[in-house]
Image (cartoon, rainbow, N blue to C red):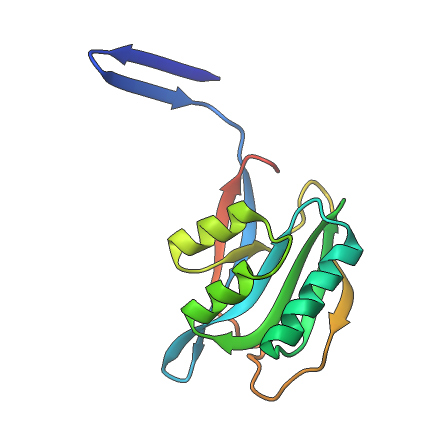
Length: 156
């Protein structure tokens, strides 16, 4: 339901929408005394072969370590690489990856960190489908990531 009122150059807008609470992991990680970021990608409506090809390409370009690819339902995928990077390098790597969801890139850039859902959505469980490359000694241990959030989405 949406209500809109306009009067004397002012607009008042009210919306009533259904929202779903989701859990997410944030890209920020404390490494020593520095706040760095690990890489997270969001691919929506992209065939699996294209996702793997895009991630392999970027992995070679930037010399990245292991990338874990997760199927999140339909033709949607998330990917994680636990190499620590500066914010500038994180943005450069993600924006140079083909097929990454543009809304995800924009929202993360504005906030200064990226968030990916880690809870099921509409009953669709997440499933690890591929591991690209090898784990490198300087990667962030995923069990030590301490930056999580809850957020609302209208897409349940």
